[in-house]
Amino acid sequence: MPDYCMCKGDGCTQRDQCFRFRAKPNKHRQSYFMDVPGSGDECHHFMPVDGWPERMLTELDLTELAEPKLPCRAGELEPGRSI
Image (cartoon, rainbow, N blue to C red; front, side):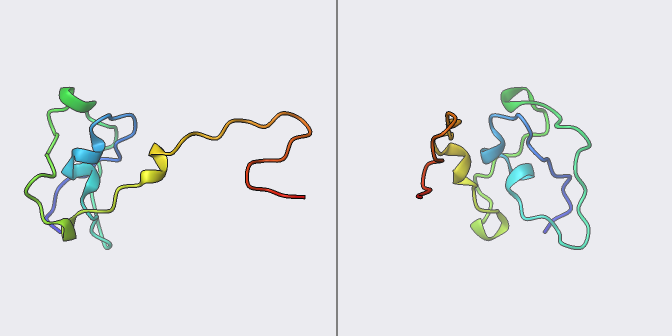
């Protein structure tokens, strides 16, 4: 893995398309921005993932795109649980 400062992507709308978020970190040492440097189009450190080999990228976490769980009302079972 090349020595790039990586980003945790908290609150960034374009993190799934950014190499600094998607790159596989070095398991022995890896630098990260202390704070997310920008958000989407406003980030001067954005590096598009286009052109990078898939072997250098982490898989996208698609669970974030799933429908959010709704809180249960008192006395109801959580979805997927049975008596």
